[in-house]
Length: 293
Image (cartoon, rainbow, N blue to C red; front, side, top):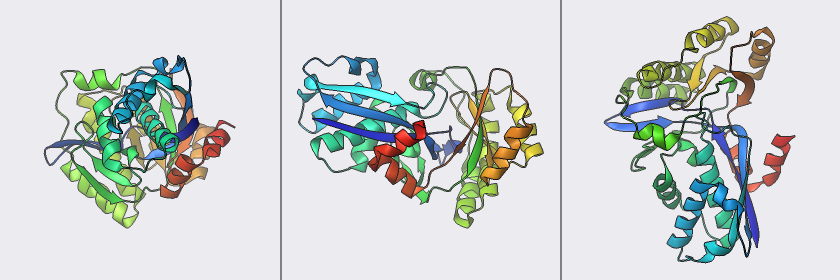
């Protein structure tokens, strides 16, 4: 008895803030992945390395009236996604665990089940959905589908700080800034397929979040964006990662060639995934293997 599933991470959030009185976020899946393998074992040992995913699995099995099965299921997680930087690594792990469990027990997908089970473990990224969604990431009560995921390319700047999502959200932080106006800009941009408008809203969201998480490197990255023809900035609102948004891959390649090093930041390219790519990621383990090279 064995099953495996893969799931992508994200580069922070395009928008995070307070919308109509609710703390929400909007994010997009990107092309790096985690893979969860579940298998039968008389003496499981590996799963204890993955506290969140193990808790998630145990909760799901209890909901399915399979409590006790977890005693003979082990888990191995292989991931390309950096941990504690704001790349939705934990959300990706939980989603991959869920899809692996569906395969293992021949169950059908249930969106509400996935939402509630993820939120039960920790605040959850909106990449759990197969389309662009405004999501109440703390309670999981509110969600609004606003359109399909859109393809764009990024030059990523990954910092060295590690941020624990649960600990960060439990801190006494200043309230999230209102993003009602940014949601309007973002929705209109998505409807018109205007990446420039969406990137504008995303950039402003990062600036407004500076009262909670300051990026000293932001002015330097904004200069790079301007000089290389980037459309805006996307980043982690509770992590250590920023990325410049570009409309085409050639622009990213040109930017890499002209880029000067930024101290303590890794720099690399990524791109978002559309609905079909996300579906194939879930269904096809080979995509993960191809990404590993």
